[in-house]
Amino acid sequence: MDKTLTLSALKKGTMRLEGQFVYGSNYTLMVICQYKGKAYQAVYKPVQGERPLWDFPPNTLARREVAAYILSEVLGWNLVPPTVFRTAKLPLGPGSSQLFIEHDPEYHYFNFKKTDQHHFPQVMLFDLLINNADRKGGHLLIDPQGKLWLIDHGLSFHHEEKLRTVIWDHAGQAIPPTLLSDVKNIIPALAPGTPTYRSLQPHLLSKEINALQKRAEALLQNATFPLPPEERRAYPWPLV
Image (cartoon, rainbow, N blue to C red):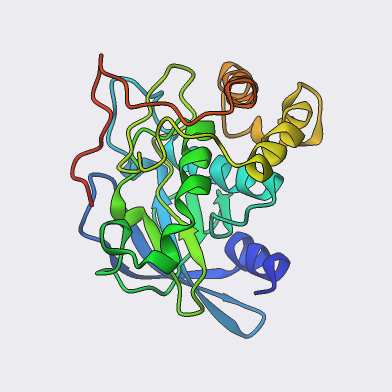
């Protein structure tokens, strides 16, 4: 994948509406982006299609999808498909546009083979960092080349603890040192005024970026995957 070309296509390509994903409570649309003679399938989430939530600021979920992509790239993990926030020439107005990943929808976290389960510590750590409030089993995709991708991060980056995930396989265990090293590297990059901070600013509140940095620091210090909290719901619904 030429990531630079893909991002340009998502930002500038001529977008044609193809259909709608019927699951989920917010508008999620399949589109085709035509750019420089090539067609890119993408998932378009318009801001106006977001259902209001009591605990997340209104009209921010599409922005959080982009923030998850940015953080994945800064970490060097390449977990989130190329994602942009686009404002012009869209069927239903501004929203996020994410490269569609070919996958088998019947193959997900709950029936992953052993060969794909080695991804779980990295996914769990990513969700801890972004404070993912909705990690369902169907949000882990394996493409035809066997690569793992993570999708649906609209309910993330809240400054208060919101983690709800199906992935607690490594709870109470030590975080692998290689993953901790990546977390250590991003902490200074999240300081105000840095390029990473500025790239997140259009998508997150300042207090949310600061909370992200504090979560990274706490994970580095504790070096252990937490146990599911007993005082609140720790799992999303539905699970897939």
